[in-house]
Length: 130
Image (cartoon, rainbow, N blue to C red; front, side, top):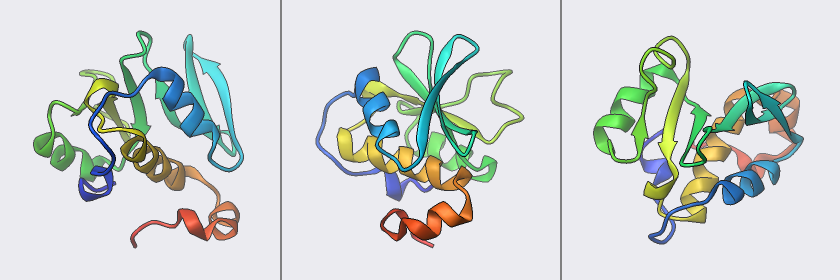
């Protein structure tokens, strides 16, 4: 995930309903409750989840990219202390997102990280920047 890939769309917060809709629009994605929260999965692997108060979502993110994203936009990206420290996971404040395009970019990036190669090959329109 890169900071550049998240900047698009018009100003305005994003709702939990928009997260659900955008996540489920990705190929072979399903929703399943885990730990009392909605999670979004491809091939059984979680790539995103909604927080328990619907103000944030968690997304799959390479651990080496997290510090840069948080430093660039601390009002948008954060870690849940003591929980995300050891996982390739990043939290996103929904109200800080600039709109549907930015939401889609973040979710698509997270989806790509866990999607099987066959699924990635079948959907070149969702290919990353490299």
